[in-house]
Structures are given as C-alpha cells and as structure tokens.
Length: 383
Image (cartoon, rainbow, N blue to C red; front, side, top):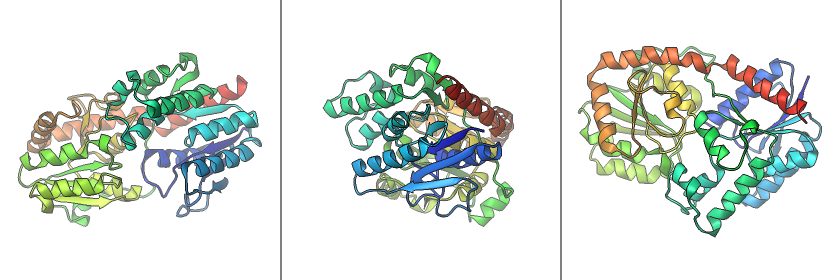
C-alpha cells in the first residue's frame, strides 16, 4: 500500500477545520492500509491520544525563515522515504522539499497565501477577488510570485470548492492539474446534547446568536457586533475564537452598551464549539472570504439556522432561502434584517434546519476519502 507523507502547519489541539481535517484524514487513510508519516510543528498534537502512525515535529523557530527551513529539512527527510507527499501547510518549503526528494506532490489549497499575509501585514485592504487583479507594491508582488512559484510546482492541486478552483486557475494553474474535493464533516464520538440541554449547561438564556472563527479582520465579527443593538432585546451573542482583532472587538462590544449580552469565549476545543452550536439558534458567518467553511458544515450538523455572507464557497453550502440566508458581505443593514427575521420566526429556523440536514448528505467523509484517495493514486500513477 502507498507510503504517504503529510505535512501540516495546524493539528489538534489547534482548533479549526484544517486541523480537524488533517487528523481525521490521517487516521482514515491509516485504516485503509496507507503507511502514514505526519510532519507538523513542535508543540502540535501534544494533547491528542497516541496516533497509529509516525508523527514527527520540527522546531518552531524564532523567525519565519528559521521555521520554514526546519519544515523543509524535516519534510524532505520523510518525504524521500515515501511514494507521495501531501502538503497542507508551509507550502513553499514543503513543495520544494518534495521536489528535492523526487516524489510526487499533491497540494491542498484552502486560501490565498499571498492575500492572507498581505492583509495580516497591512499591505492591502482589498477583497480576495480584487486582490487577484491588483498589482500592489513590491512586497505584494513578492508574495504573489512566491505563491505562484510553489503552487505551479505541485503535481496536482486539491481545492475544497469550485470558487477556489477558479481562483487557483487565475494563478496560471491549468485546469487539468486541479481537483475539487469538497470538505466533509463528521459527528463527534460522543453524542451531542439536545439544544435545551446545551443552553442550560452553558448558562444561555433567550435566543442565542453565535459566530466562530479566528478573530481577524476579514471575518466580519465587527459588523455582527455593530448590528446587535438593533436586534430584539432578549437576544444573546456568543463569539468563539481568538486572534489579533480580539481586543478591538471587545472594545466595540463595550461601546454598544450591551456588553452583558455579548460573550467572548476565546478559543475552544471542537467538542465545546459543537456544544455552543447546539445551544445557539442562529449561526452567523459574516466573512468577506471563505474557501469552503467547515464551520458551516458543523452548523448544518448541529441543527443551527445559518446566516452567511455570499462570499467565496459559502453559496456552495448555503442555498439562500432554502437552508439559510445569504447576505452581501459588509452590508450591515441586510445582516440585521435577516437576523431579525429569523429571531422572530422559529418556524423558518426549523425549516432551514431540516433542509440543512438534507444538504449535509453531500458533505460526508466516505465521499471525501474516496475522492482524495483517487487523487493520490492519480498523482503517483502519473509520475
């Protein structure tokens, strides 16, 4: 059976869809007979139960350059002993390590490396789509060249949505190298509590709105806080996550005068996030960019009515007016209108939940696993 090396920059106990994906996929592939070697940064995976495959870490250096060099060396060492390298993080270092090790490389692209770094460094305020067409300064151009350089050198590229596949084509990647494999969601090992039980255990009274994610500027948490004072007076807001925007968002919540109705939980493990989703009446994803959100899939699984921006891959999960509402990103008035509508109409929320369960059938793990294995076999067979 195939010897597969997987490199990732995120892994449990890290929260987020990519961390859950890598851990689940590695175990599922091992169960199918693959010989798995996982390469991750040091400090990751420390709280997970012993894994049935090889796990190796590299030093998280004091600088970006040092950690990328460490990722390159460790990936090259272990990729060379395998049949295929699957890259989920440290893209330029990992892809070039695979090329140096002379093994086929499959790269999963869940976002735009150049755009995210440009936004985080304050080099651009553009949306992802506008960023693709812009020239920017020398630093932005360097980020784009780096992105194009390593993505073009992967044998095959997996994207989790049609939307991202189109973005990747714009980087000069031919369509015949791109494979769309939708993300999947899986219920936790322990059964989730009923909504009322979850509400009581978390001390939540009244209609509850939740948003989950890294607290970064493109997630739109500030817009949700801005519209909150206009919602019915018994509503509560829960924001789960941490990040560079955390203090600004807390300050904004204080300015509303409704701080006692807004709860910031910080980062939470997945089992606690799911408990909050079960307790919530409405899940909001107000971001200006998403590849294909694991959060939306988990919201469907937990039976939470959804309001999401119409950006990125969100419309591939949420059908407006069928299993949720789509709103234009940055349109606070539209977001407020849809939230008020859902808060006042429990029957509409229930219909969205029912349709959401049906939609979820398209995002199962058996499908993801088979399609991913097919891509791996194709990559190895084509070299």
